[in-house]
Image (cartoon, rainbow, N blue to C red; front, side):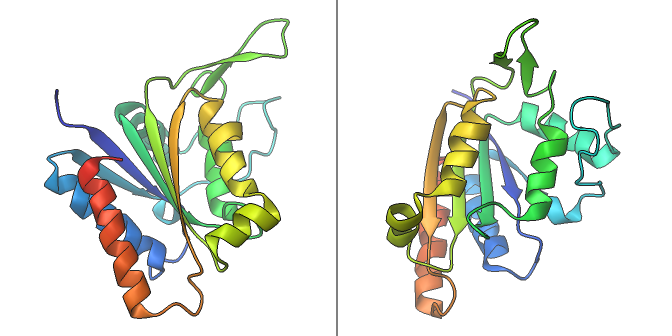
Length: 194
């Protein structure tokens, strides 16, 4: 079996965030397994995050988004890393999803039907997200809305059926030992290509 092709997509807008350290930890682990790894930091892309016409009228893709589509197609395994803000993904990442996961690329609408067909099948994904509350609290009190939106409403919808989720929290007020422990765990996930 050939080494996996892994794309890490970092949705945090701050390059000094813990999410960037998590991205790096996963990359280090994955490279130790001889996987081919590419990293896409959404904050570094030049694009308008507003899908201003919806699907009614085409908005031309910027070169960075065209390259992002190539990378998404290229990879066998996607690793989405982002903070949960207001029970959702950051605005810039949401704009990225809106602009990149378009009909004809991520899914195909059926003529005269409310249903569509996924275009990005055969891939796997890992979601690694950070919270400012305990993971159990986010799950049991709020119902993990961002997890459902990313896993079911986005990734499963476009054909990525095997999606695992790692929730890290609380980050706010956490100490260095707690963060170091998580960096080791994420590096191990990278080594396992999971």
